[in-house]
Image 1 (cartoon, rainbow, N blue to C red):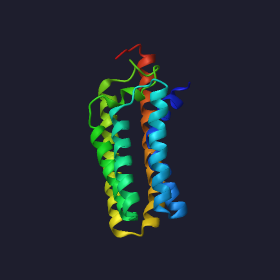
Image 2 (cartoon, rainbow, N blue to C red; image 1 turned 120 degrees about the vertical axis):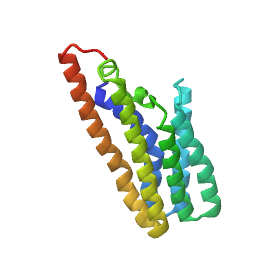
Image 3 (cartoon, rainbow, N blue to C red; image 1 turned 30 degrees about the horizontal axis):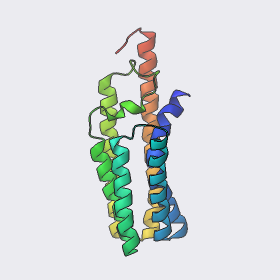
Image 4 (tube, one colour; image 1 turned 135 degrees about the horizontal axis):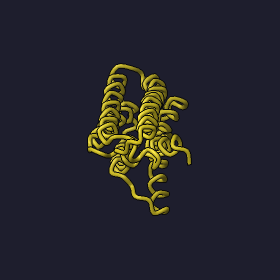
Length: 188
């Protein structure tokens, strides 16, 4: 598996339930459908990981718990603002989980291990946490001030776009550092 795919795969898996929720809400405007699909995908992801014997990270458990609990409450209330507000709580919880030092280690492909300084990996983890907090604030502001379908449409673009942009920048930086360290014979 290429280092790019190795690094991107878990990020996309972690984001899938949120992205699917936003996409369904933006496309259909149906709160119950979007919430149900998001919950089902989140539960299915963890079930598949468990069946394959994979360790489930704290961030994945946090996201799943919030999706199930808040999604269940959303299905009861049928209030689009509530389900959109839930996304801000999810972003804040994931951002808080990302404040754990070294969490990003599981995303590092084997070829990069030993070639990227731990301080870079830890720093990148904190930048990711910051992006989650900014996303949560953006979502909260839109939820309070804009139409729910507009909020979902904007977040459908922002959620993957901001993460893919940060991922690309981090990937290029880490690749450059790894190549430089490899050429210099430096192991960190």
